[in-house]
Amino acid sequence: MARRKLFCEYGPVCYQLSLRKERLVRHAKDLAGRQRFAATRQTEPLPALVKGHCSVIRRRLAGVDPRLQEGKARNLELAAAKVNGLVIAPGETFSFWRTVGNATRRKGYQEGLTISGGRLGHGIGGGLCQLANLIHWLVLNSPLTVTELHHHSDALFPDERRTVPFGTGTSVFYNNVDYRFRNDTGQPVQLLIWLREDELCGELRCLQPFPYRYRLVEENSHYARLEDGYYRLSQVYKLTIDRATGTVLRRELILDNRSRVLFDPALIPPEELREEDGGRWSRPMQKENPL
Image (cartoon, rainbow, N blue to C red; front, side, top):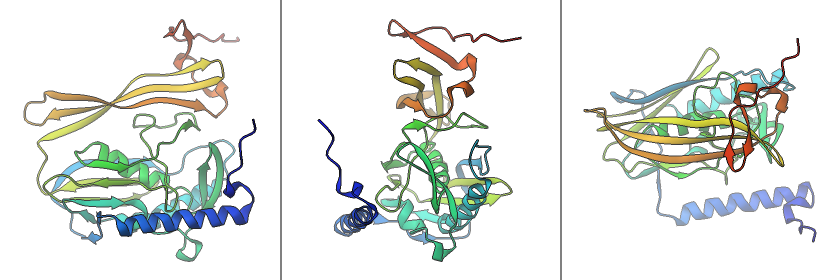
């Protein structure tokens, strides 16, 4: 039996009407809810560093117009200025889109790379997922509570200069696909975001060091050839470590990756490819090396 088409799939006009409806629904829920959203910014950094990180802005991506990378850099610059210095008080919630706002051409945003339905595209404000990813990585390394997260479900590119576990990013799309976290600690935290040469940098800061520090570890990372294609698999654990003694107090599985590979499987490193064998993973497959 054929799947019934959604209203938004009947053409551009229907899509825009559906999009407007979803945005109005989001606004209505926020007005009716009891969340307090962070809106205060200060230029002076809070004294204690919780976590810092930088990510490369312009990556080498086969078949991607370099102009989209330049547009992404400009988009990140504009959005970073909206987030930089934001203080999230105890009990307040951070919302990516309430902080950044709608990324429109009128505000200076440019065409950048977008990902929708497992496909690459382009659009005004494209590339802002990288900012959401950075913020989420800082939050993962803290005791803050993530309240809304939309994982990327596919492996779109080969790993290239990756410095964080695979799958720890998040999708955002104005305004109904948001990224949010709540400050359930007893002190304010602050986000600092800036661009440095070809890097997007960020810090999460607070007044006093938290009693615990956190570490994210990725295990059993590999690619697998299954019946319906190639997949990127791994498990990501969050370790809670006592700051005074260095003792691991908690080990929590936060992500079990099973992401379909959408790039050319020939780009998978041979030593990272395994195939299923009776429900267990065999040793890495060895590809022939033609001499």
